[in-house]
Length: 288
Image (cartoon, rainbow, N blue to C red; front, side, top):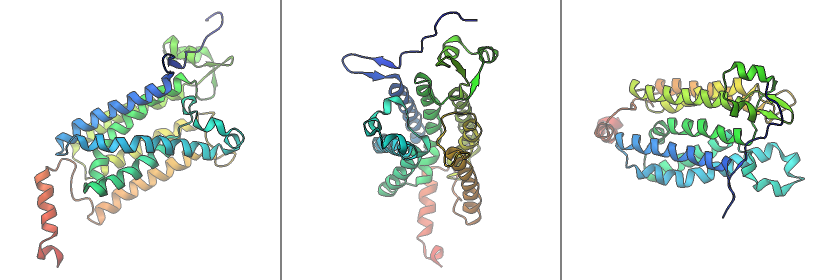
């Protein structure tokens, strides 16, 4: 049994000459590692690595903005009375589903402008998105948020967790489930799974849809353990409703796209084969 007061980790990483919070630094690290992974794979798939650099310049700030707006909208009772808190994103309050809406919308528009298949970009970027989410959850850890219900120290020690995690889960005199850790581990496993699925050579778009299914399954169950969920009603958690909807939508898209012949290309198709298939679409025979 640990005696004495347990001090939480300092959420401030650097205080001079500017204040940098661990929350932002960790999320930024996840984004950079995700970008590195995506640029490596994009070159293998015949895309210039600068494509993803250009994409994230738009996608990341838009995703952060949408993640914050999403969170604020569902916590409007608080923010309407405290408008100055809306900009305090270093204190937490970025909803991942809102961020995904912003990032995917940006990706669709970017792909159309650049004349690139959105599904190709999404497949390449899927492991990177999940990697960023896995790392980003540690920002919640530093802020002592996104945790679950009450537990005992003995329970946490039974999970063989290091003391720095156990101590950080001690909040206002009570220990809590480290749900941030559960989701981070789930996401890291998912990254490995997606990297394996690359070699299976799924139909185009299905790697990204597999990411949606994997993440949503984990989020549904872990969300049920959290104490800070955004609520649709008193008993209905928004993230769980969205997770179920995304699982159904992703499975339906996989089936419909195959049935309608919209997913004939595969993830590992070489660039020259894609150009050949594009040229066949424009032949007289193809238009009959």
